Length: 220
Image (cartoon, rainbow, N blue to C red; front, side, top):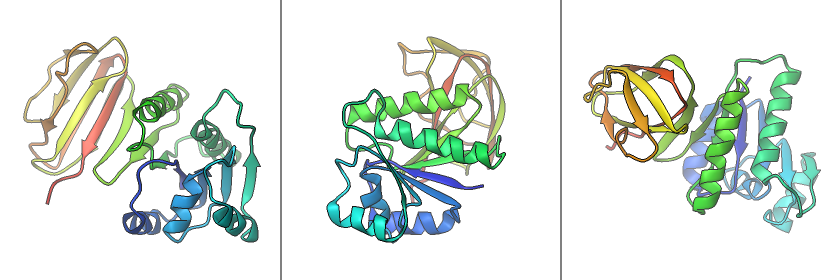
């Protein structure tokens, strides 16, 4: 099942329209102002979540006219609108018995650094609860890797970075230009930045710790 969440970050309407068409979405959930972004790309959200201080009155009217499920929260709350939207995404997947399907998150960054860092924390929380949330942007895709092995698809010359989210993380790679052999990545260094695919894929093994993988789009 394909569940897509749109936050209220940086967004190109033309690119967004193309990506959302490719996704073949079963459920589109927007976090407040993410509804503006979806509608600018020709999609009306199935669920709109948040305090509704960012979506325009015009777009809120469009949502209501198209029977969008609107979940309104007070402005004074502990959770961000995106955190609430991700909780709804999890509920949708659980209600359909989808334990393994990942959530695709768009517009998760680009405007405010504090929101971006908070959103990474939400990806980590989801991963620790056995749900992958993949952040997708025009220039990168990113997700959290916990201990275990994973094959990452790429093309020769494409860059990726491995950033520890725990105090340290021990990582081995196969298929990268700068191979890692049980390398200890620490939060006080930038050792894992800008590695490169040697072939059409690479294997990443996290022995311990938590890693944020950033896969950069190949430059044309």
